[in-house]
Length: 45
Image 1: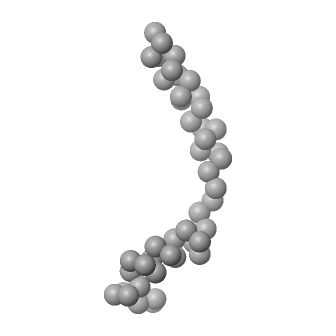
Image 2 (image 1 turned 135 degrees about the vertical axis):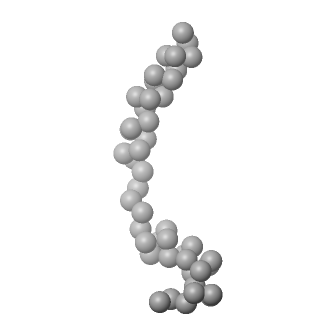
């Protein structure tokens, strides 16, 4: 019974944690990954 209660509590808390996630910023979050791993071979275009 304790396991089921814990799982239920986790399900209730999950949406709250998803709402707190910050938005992805291309310049800050994505571009550095592309710059480090892709642009040398594929170029900026």
